[in-house]
Image (cartoon, rainbow, N blue to C red; front, side):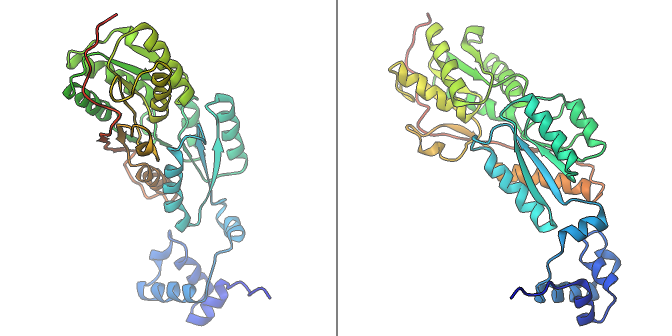
Amino acid sequence: MTKPRVTLKDIAGRVGVHPSTVSRVLNPKTRGMVNPEIAATIAETADKMGYRPNPFAYSLRTRRSFIIGVMIPDIANPVFPPIIRGIERILEPHGYAVVLANTDNSSERERVSIERFVERQVDGLITATSLLSDDFLVDLGADVPVVFVNRRAETPGVPSVVVNDAAGIAAIIEHLVSLGHRRVAHVAGPQLMSTGKIRYETFVEECRKAGLATDATLIEFTDAFMEGEGRRAATALLKREKFTAIVAANDLLALGCYGALADAGLVCGRDVSVTGFNDMPFVDRLQPPLTTVHIPLNEMGEGAARLLLDQLMENGSSETTITLQPELVVRASTGPAPKVAKK
């Protein structure tokens, strides 16, 4: 037999207060209106009685769906599950459910996903995609709070959580120079994405500062942060240039570089060093383990969720950008530079 749902009236009767007082206590936005001692008693009683809010009834009262839309560009990318886990960890205790949309790097799918989220009256949106113009998302933000994660907003004032991409690439170049590398290639990410653009621009600038070659022939751009694109780009570089290291814009591109080196009969870490970016799960188990830039993915998701909660609860937080610091993790995919003649 199903146990009857505990109601606000049940809790009120047990404590000896009016149901409206219980309602105020169980709402984080109004709990401060109730005497702290009474509020503590009500909260403890609700917990002991096994009270669970009725989301449908509550959404009718508050005119909220308690659903948050989360958009990612590639569900197969291991970077995103830790970010999503961080988002859920912060939002779930506040009664919010997360609904995920995968856009497959398609601007049309991104637009359709946003329209469907709006139709379903989501309370907020966290997006890791970046194919649509910021103006579209800013306009959406007038009705639905928006937070960017793992990407930068071109429009000032739009909340975002990002990693210091420039610092990460600078650390990679410093590491490669210390190993004697003088000719370094770059498998660059998509330039329509802030991560790809910033990492490419920083690569060129840091190579210039270090006195390394910055020939355009040492750079190959990709259309997506995917293994196949990394393999294609690295293969093209190997056919036209001589170099001793490849800086890939992310770990999946680096994984593609592994394949291209194997195709060419070269040994990663000995003949050509390879670096990635993100430190996604399992790259420490590659052969050889990948030297990469670690970013705190769980913390990134948690930060995005907190920025969204600030908007939903009208906390008046002035913080709109959280920048996380990366850390270079050196593994066996990088080694001393072999001598190599320029083509």
